[in-house]
Length: 77
Image (cartoon, rainbow, N blue to C red):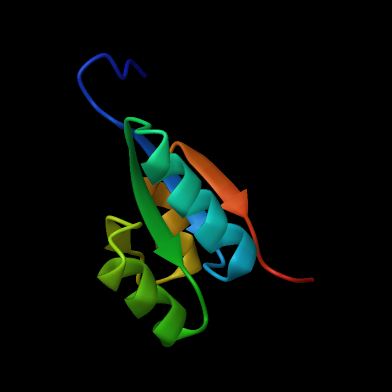
């Protein structure tokens, strides 16, 4: 798949300290990416949108994984 005219779609599973920090870092360096997140905590997702570090919220983990080019697991085990 060529991304010459489109942004790479990154999915972050877990928008806590690690996932949130990754999203912030991608925004700070001006990466040409679209960031979609999924988290079991709706407050974390809302904070990500308010801070404008994510572009969207996936309705489910399955939806996130099927919609992104790269998935990052940033959730505790």
